Length: 156
Image (cartoon, rainbow, N blue to C red; front, side, top):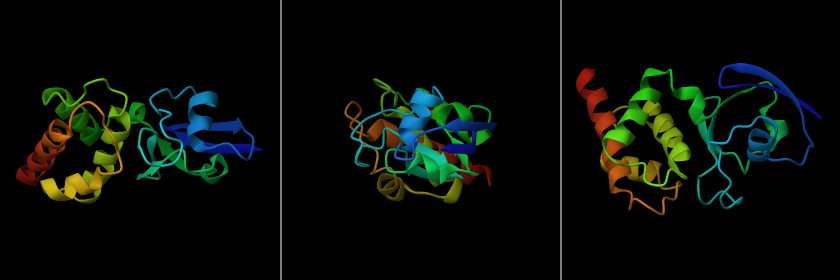
């Protein structure tokens, strides 16, 4: 089956088996290596992408469901001011560690901050609870995302 969608601002049409997940489609057919393979069951968040601006776990979305829609990976947010701000905060606060979970966490944070710019630490913790990080203990990640939320609140 053919699936036509926008990936990081670029229109694509890809031939894919109907049983393929979005994660498989992105990694194997579109070379989107930031979309990690973790649990394949929606528990780790390593495959998180934005689907029409909403954070989703790509291992749980069938590739056919993206036809006519927009998919954003971490590569697609570098030019956006909030995306760049979140990425810079991760670097500034040492929230990167091994980097395996980072793309998914960054996208989850971006989607949440875009929806709730006044987020406090507890709501951020809840929003990021679907992303597993085995390296940081989450505090540095929360520090980074909280710093972005505070800057956005002060600037408003």
